[in-house]
Length: 143
Length: 129
Ligand SMILES: Nc1ncnc2c1ncn2[C@@H]1O[C@H](COP(=O)(O)OP(=O)(O)OP(=O)(O)O)[C@@H](O)[C@H]1O
Ligand SMILES: [Mg+2]
Figure 1 (cartoon, rainbow over the protein chains, first blue to last red):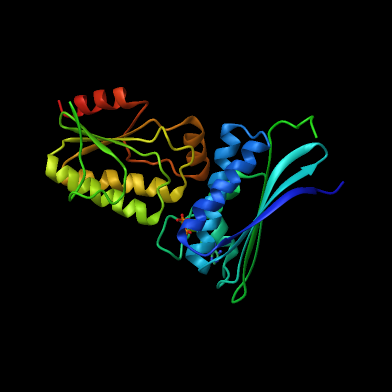
Figure 2 (cartoon, chains in turn cyan, green; figure 1 turned 90 degrees about the horizontal axis):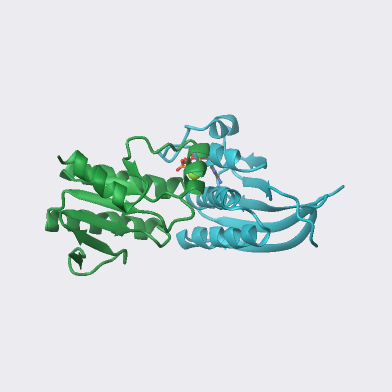
Protein backbone atom coordinates (compact mmCIF):
# COMPACT_ATOMS: atom_id res chain seq x y z
CA UNK A 1 0.00 0.00 0.00
CA UNK A 2 1.29 3.40 -0.84
CA UNK A 3 0.33 6.67 0.68
CA UNK A 4 -2.08 8.61 -1.52
CA UNK A 5 -1.88 12.39 -1.71
CA UNK A 6 -5.44 13.71 -1.82
CA UNK A 7 -4.64 17.42 -1.96
CA UNK A 8 -1.62 19.62 -1.63
CA UNK A 9 -0.68 23.21 -1.17
CA UNK A 10 2.69 24.91 -1.28
CA UNK A 11 3.47 28.04 0.70
CA UNK A 12 6.61 30.14 0.55
CA UNK A 13 8.35 31.19 3.73
CA UNK A 14 9.84 34.56 2.86
CA UNK A 15 9.10 36.61 5.92
CA UNK A 16 8.10 36.33 9.54
CA UNK A 17 4.39 36.62 8.75
CA UNK A 18 4.56 33.60 6.46
CA UNK A 19 5.05 31.41 9.56
CA UNK A 20 1.57 32.48 10.67
CA UNK A 21 0.14 31.71 7.22
CA UNK A 22 1.69 28.23 7.27
CA UNK A 23 0.23 27.33 10.62
CA UNK A 24 -3.16 28.75 9.70
CA UNK A 25 -3.21 26.58 6.57
CA UNK A 26 -2.19 23.53 8.61
CA UNK A 27 -4.88 24.24 11.19
CA UNK A 28 -7.58 24.40 8.51
CA UNK A 29 -6.33 21.18 6.90
CA UNK A 30 -6.26 19.32 10.23
CA UNK A 31 -9.75 20.47 11.13
CA UNK A 32 -11.11 19.43 7.73
CA UNK A 33 -9.62 15.98 8.23
CA UNK A 34 -11.40 15.62 11.55
CA UNK A 35 -8.38 15.98 13.83
CA UNK A 36 -9.42 16.55 17.45
CA UNK A 37 -8.26 19.64 19.36
CA UNK A 38 -5.17 17.88 20.73
CA UNK A 39 -3.97 16.56 17.38
CA UNK A 40 -4.74 19.90 15.72
CA UNK A 41 -2.71 21.80 18.32
CA UNK A 42 0.14 19.29 17.98
CA UNK A 43 0.41 19.44 14.20
CA UNK A 44 -0.08 23.23 14.10
CA UNK A 45 2.61 23.73 16.72
CA UNK A 46 5.03 21.43 14.89
CA UNK A 47 4.37 23.40 11.69
CA UNK A 48 5.07 26.63 13.51
CA UNK A 49 8.38 25.35 14.93
CA UNK A 50 9.59 23.95 11.63
CA UNK A 51 8.53 26.98 9.59
CA UNK A 52 10.26 29.19 12.13
CA UNK A 53 13.45 27.16 11.78
CA UNK A 54 13.30 27.63 7.99
CA UNK A 55 12.97 31.36 8.53
CA UNK A 56 15.47 31.93 11.35
CA UNK A 57 18.17 29.41 10.47
CA UNK A 58 17.95 29.36 6.66
CA UNK A 59 16.49 32.78 5.84
CA UNK A 60 13.52 31.28 4.02
CA UNK A 61 12.25 28.33 2.05
CA UNK A 62 8.96 26.58 1.49
CA UNK A 63 6.32 24.43 3.12
CA UNK A 64 4.47 21.81 1.10
CA UNK A 65 1.33 20.70 2.91
CA UNK A 66 -0.41 17.49 1.89
CA UNK A 67 -3.61 15.72 2.83
CA UNK A 68 -2.70 12.06 2.76
CA UNK A 69 -4.54 8.76 2.95
CA UNK A 70 -3.29 5.26 3.66
CA UNK A 71 -5.49 2.24 4.27
CA UNK A 72 -8.48 4.36 5.23
CA UNK A 73 -6.48 6.57 7.54
CA UNK A 74 -6.18 10.26 6.84
CA UNK A 75 -3.41 12.58 7.81
CA UNK A 76 -1.39 15.69 7.17
CA UNK A 77 2.12 15.52 5.77
CA UNK A 78 4.35 18.58 5.65
CA UNK A 79 7.64 19.10 3.82
CA UNK A 80 9.78 22.03 4.97
CA UNK A 81 12.55 22.78 2.50
CA UNK A 82 15.29 25.35 2.50
CA UNK A 83 18.62 26.04 0.88
CA UNK A 84 20.21 27.40 4.00
CA UNK A 85 23.44 26.36 5.74
CA UNK A 86 22.27 22.87 6.66
CA UNK A 87 22.66 21.23 10.05
CA UNK A 88 26.22 20.16 10.80
CA UNK A 89 25.49 17.93 13.77
CA UNK A 90 22.06 16.47 13.20
CA UNK A 91 22.27 14.13 16.20
CA UNK A 92 22.88 17.02 18.53
CA UNK A 93 20.20 19.21 16.95
CA UNK A 94 17.65 16.40 17.31
CA UNK A 95 18.61 15.54 20.88
CA UNK A 96 17.20 18.88 22.03
CA UNK A 97 18.72 21.55 24.21
CA UNK A 98 21.15 22.53 21.47
CA UNK A 99 20.78 25.83 19.66
CA UNK A 100 22.98 27.94 17.44
CA UNK A 101 20.56 30.80 18.02
CA UNK A 102 20.96 31.01 21.80
CA UNK A 103 17.44 29.74 22.18
CA UNK A 104 16.21 26.74 24.14
CA UNK A 105 16.81 24.41 21.22
CA UNK A 106 13.58 22.50 21.67
CA UNK A 107 11.91 23.23 18.33
CA UNK A 108 13.24 20.26 16.40
CA UNK A 109 13.16 17.67 19.19
CA UNK A 110 9.84 19.02 20.43
CA UNK A 111 8.11 18.85 17.08
CA UNK A 112 9.39 15.31 16.64
CA UNK A 113 7.42 14.35 19.75
CA UNK A 114 4.26 15.97 18.40
CA UNK A 115 3.99 14.01 15.15
CA UNK A 116 3.78 10.36 14.07
CA UNK A 117 6.47 10.42 11.40
CA UNK A 118 9.55 12.58 11.33
CA UNK A 119 12.48 12.68 8.95
CA UNK A 120 15.29 15.18 8.44
CA UNK A 121 17.77 15.31 5.62
CA UNK A 122 20.37 18.01 5.77
CA UNK A 123 23.53 18.75 3.83
CA UNK A 124 25.92 21.38 5.06
CA UNK A 125 26.09 24.22 2.54
CA UNK A 126 23.11 22.90 0.59
CA UNK A 127 20.07 22.97 2.82
CA UNK A 128 17.61 21.04 4.90
CA UNK A 129 14.42 19.09 4.27
CA UNK A 130 12.21 18.12 7.20
CA UNK A 131 9.23 15.86 6.44
CA UNK A 132 6.68 15.10 9.13
CA UNK A 133 3.27 13.43 9.16
CA UNK A 134 0.46 13.15 11.61
CA UNK A 135 -2.57 10.88 11.31
CA UNK A 136 -6.08 11.60 12.45
CA UNK A 137 -6.64 9.58 15.59
CA UNK A 138 -9.61 7.63 14.28
CA UNK A 139 -9.80 6.29 10.76
CA UNK A 140 -12.43 7.94 8.66
CA UNK A 141 -15.13 5.81 7.09
CA UNK A 142 -16.19 8.35 4.53
CA UNK A 143 -14.56 9.13 1.19
CA UNK B 1 -14.47 49.87 37.15
CA UNK B 2 -12.55 49.14 34.01
CA UNK B 3 -10.70 51.43 31.71
CA UNK B 4 -8.86 50.77 28.53
CA UNK B 5 -5.24 51.66 29.09
CA UNK B 6 -2.64 52.00 26.40
CA UNK B 7 1.00 52.89 26.65
CA UNK B 8 2.26 56.16 25.27
CA UNK B 9 -1.15 56.97 23.85
CA UNK B 10 -0.82 54.65 20.87
CA UNK B 11 -1.21 50.89 21.31
CA UNK B 12 1.28 49.42 18.88
CA UNK B 13 0.41 45.87 19.72
CA UNK B 14 -3.37 46.39 19.50
CA UNK B 15 -3.86 44.03 22.41
CA UNK B 16 -6.35 45.60 24.81
CA UNK B 17 -5.36 46.08 28.43
CA UNK B 18 -8.08 46.47 31.03
CA UNK B 19 -7.55 47.90 34.48
CA UNK B 20 -9.40 46.25 37.34
CA UNK B 21 -8.45 47.92 40.63
CA UNK B 22 -4.67 47.62 40.86
CA UNK B 23 -4.55 44.70 38.46
CA UNK B 24 -4.10 44.80 34.70
CA UNK B 25 -5.98 42.26 32.64
CA UNK B 26 -4.64 41.48 29.20
CA UNK B 27 -6.54 39.23 26.83
CA UNK B 28 -4.40 37.78 24.08
CA UNK B 29 -6.48 36.74 21.11
CA UNK B 30 -4.37 37.42 18.09
CA UNK B 31 -1.36 35.50 16.88
CA UNK B 32 1.67 36.83 18.73
CA UNK B 33 4.39 36.90 16.14
CA UNK B 34 7.72 38.69 16.42
CA UNK B 35 6.91 42.34 15.77
CA UNK B 36 3.63 42.13 17.69
CA UNK B 37 5.26 40.27 20.58
CA UNK B 38 7.93 42.90 21.20
CA UNK B 39 5.40 45.74 21.02
CA UNK B 40 3.09 43.78 23.31
CA UNK B 41 5.78 43.42 25.97
CA UNK B 42 6.92 47.01 25.76
CA UNK B 43 3.39 48.45 25.80
CA UNK B 44 2.56 46.34 28.80
CA UNK B 45 5.63 47.38 30.79
CA UNK B 46 4.94 51.07 30.13
CA UNK B 47 1.31 50.56 31.16
CA UNK B 48 2.46 48.92 34.40
CA UNK B 49 4.66 51.91 35.12
CA UNK B 50 1.93 54.43 34.32
CA UNK B 51 -0.79 52.72 36.31
CA UNK B 52 1.32 51.40 39.15
CA UNK B 53 -0.43 48.06 38.74
CA UNK B 54 0.61 45.48 41.31
CA UNK B 55 -0.69 42.51 39.44
CA UNK B 56 -0.92 41.38 35.83
CA UNK B 57 -3.21 38.71 34.46
CA UNK B 58 -2.58 37.42 30.98
CA UNK B 59 -5.59 35.55 29.64
CA UNK B 60 -4.77 33.13 26.80
CA UNK B 61 -8.15 31.43 26.49
CA UNK B 62 -8.25 32.70 22.92
CA UNK B 63 -5.04 30.94 21.87
CA UNK B 64 -5.50 27.47 20.37
CA UNK B 65 -1.79 27.19 19.68
CA UNK B 66 1.21 28.27 21.72
CA UNK B 67 4.53 27.42 20.12
CA UNK B 68 7.93 27.75 21.76
CA UNK B 69 8.23 31.30 20.55
CA UNK B 70 4.95 32.48 22.04
CA UNK B 71 5.63 30.49 25.21
CA UNK B 72 8.90 32.33 25.60
CA UNK B 73 7.27 35.71 24.98
CA UNK B 74 4.69 34.99 27.68
CA UNK B 75 7.25 33.73 30.21
CA UNK B 76 9.59 36.65 29.50
CA UNK B 77 6.78 39.15 29.91
CA UNK B 78 6.12 37.77 33.40
CA UNK B 79 9.82 38.00 34.23
CA UNK B 80 10.01 41.60 33.01
CA UNK B 81 6.95 42.57 35.05
CA UNK B 82 8.47 40.78 38.05
CA UNK B 83 11.58 42.96 37.81
CA UNK B 84 9.33 45.98 38.05
CA UNK B 85 7.64 44.55 41.12
CA UNK B 86 4.44 43.28 39.52
CA UNK B 87 3.20 39.70 39.86
CA UNK B 88 1.96 37.96 36.75
CA UNK B 89 -0.51 35.10 36.46
CA UNK B 90 -1.10 33.33 33.16
CA UNK B 91 -4.69 32.13 32.95
CA UNK B 92 -6.96 30.18 30.64
CA UNK B 93 -4.49 27.84 28.99
CA UNK B 94 -6.50 25.35 26.96
CA UNK B 95 -6.01 21.61 27.57
CA UNK B 96 -4.57 20.98 24.10
CA UNK B 97 -2.11 23.82 24.55
CA UNK B 98 -0.94 22.51 27.94
CA UNK B 99 -0.52 19.00 26.51
CA UNK B 100 1.41 20.24 23.49
CA UNK B 101 3.79 22.42 25.50
CA UNK B 102 4.66 19.65 27.94
CA UNK B 103 5.16 17.12 25.12
CA UNK B 104 7.58 19.53 23.52
CA UNK B 105 9.50 19.93 26.74
CA UNK B 106 8.32 23.43 27.60
CA UNK B 107 6.90 23.12 31.09
CA UNK B 108 6.88 26.93 31.51
CA UNK B 109 8.59 26.55 34.88
CA UNK B 110 8.58 29.69 36.97
CA UNK B 111 5.36 30.96 35.39
CA UNK B 112 2.41 31.35 37.76
CA UNK B 113 -0.80 29.98 36.32
CA UNK B 114 -4.49 29.73 37.18
CA UNK B 115 -7.50 28.13 35.54
CA UNK B 116 -9.34 31.35 34.72
CA UNK B 117 -9.46 35.10 35.40
CA UNK B 118 -11.36 34.68 38.68
CA UNK B 119 -8.85 32.19 40.02
CA UNK B 120 -6.04 34.42 38.81
CA UNK B 121 -7.41 37.40 40.70
CA UNK B 122 -7.73 35.22 43.78
CA UNK B 123 -4.15 34.06 43.46
CA UNK B 124 -2.89 37.63 43.12
CA UNK B 125 -4.90 38.60 46.14
CA UNK B 126 -3.26 35.84 48.19
CA UNK B 127 0.19 36.73 46.90
CA UNK B 128 -0.18 40.37 47.76
CA UNK B 129 -1.75 39.70 51.11
N1 LIG C 1 16.25 24.57 8.71
C1 LIG C 1 17.41 24.64 9.38
N2 LIG C 1 18.54 25.03 8.76
C2 LIG C 1 19.72 25.11 9.43
N3 LIG C 1 19.86 24.78 10.73
C3 LIG C 1 18.78 24.38 11.40
C4 LIG C 1 17.50 24.28 10.78
N4 LIG C 1 16.61 23.82 11.70
C5 LIG C 1 17.30 23.65 12.83
N5 LIG C 1 18.61 23.98 12.67
C6 LIG C 1 19.70 23.88 13.66
O1 LIG C 1 19.28 23.00 14.68
C7 LIG C 1 19.33 23.67 15.96
C8 LIG C 1 18.18 23.16 16.82
O2 LIG C 1 16.93 23.57 16.24
P1 LIG C 1 15.71 23.81 17.24
O3 LIG C 1 14.54 24.27 16.47
O4 LIG C 1 15.57 22.58 18.05
O5 LIG C 1 16.25 24.97 18.17
P2 LIG C 1 16.35 26.54 17.92
O6 LIG C 1 15.62 26.90 16.68
O7 LIG C 1 17.78 26.94 17.98
O8 LIG C 1 15.60 27.09 19.19
P3 LIG C 1 14.02 27.04 19.52
O9 LIG C 1 13.89 26.26 20.78
O10 LIG C 1 13.67 28.47 19.68
O11 LIG C 1 13.35 26.40 18.35
C9 LIG C 1 19.26 25.13 15.61
O12 LIG C 1 19.83 25.96 16.60
C10 LIG C 1 20.03 25.20 14.31
O13 LIG C 1 21.41 25.23 14.54
MG1 LIG D 1 13.66 26.32 16.34
